Length: 380
Image (cartoon, rainbow, N blue to C red):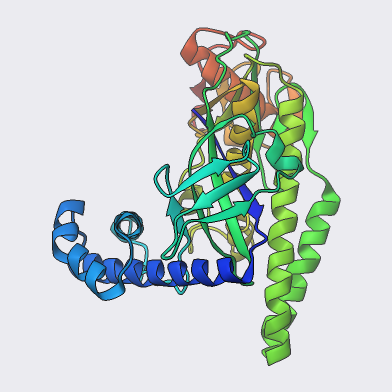
């Protein structure tokens, strides 16, 4: 199932804004109460939490039953996520929020006027809100939508987020397999000799981090205020860079093609742990947005019918894509791989070819030259 979330800015009357604000406020209070109860008991089942707190919340806050159950389920999801992080050794504190968006379902919202408006349940009467289908939203107008959320952003503006779903079109595999190596210097290198990412992006990023360091050292009230804006500018810039790379990669592929990437889960713990590598390298690994780039590649590949597969990343940068020998010495520099079999290749391009070879060997195919099973060079 293909899922997309679309944000709609809302134009509310003063009366609608007041009643929606009241509903969000009560929903937030109920959510915080459910979180407090579940957190205090170390996590609870939905049945136990419902029996202990449902009637109390209904009587104290007066929130409608549908929203009471919705806020309870949302609170349990939040506590469950926090407990998972804690079990992984992460430091977490009890979740708290000043404004929680209201979850909507088929019982609390519906489309009207050929999807040009929606009606939403509030503490008062059900309100009707006009819906403006902007350019990004229009592509999903015919998709199924039975859920979403409504609330206020951090600037106090009312927003509506609707979740659209559609059954994906399953294309037969074409047999084309392309390996993709993600890196810190080069965003992505494909096994078909395609390089993505610009050096100017890294330079702009370096300038923003330099500005952030100076503002942090300054420490004044105006510096902290400026720091928030710079962090947001950096975040948006990096997201845009990843989006550009993902779109350019998917544009090269056809429905049914396969792109293979490395599974880089916990890469920071393996290659960026304190005491194992230099501080400068740890900083670069910490700023590396490999996961977001993977998510964007999957996001655009899903709609086009392109298969995204993963392989283990071990030794992909030390293996020769021509003869299969594994030797750390062959990685002459960050950008050059040279093997005794005569292969002289960009190191990232060699890794991308290995990624494709590994997946094809495991799945009965071959993207290029047939290679022997890798063997590790004996130590002298």
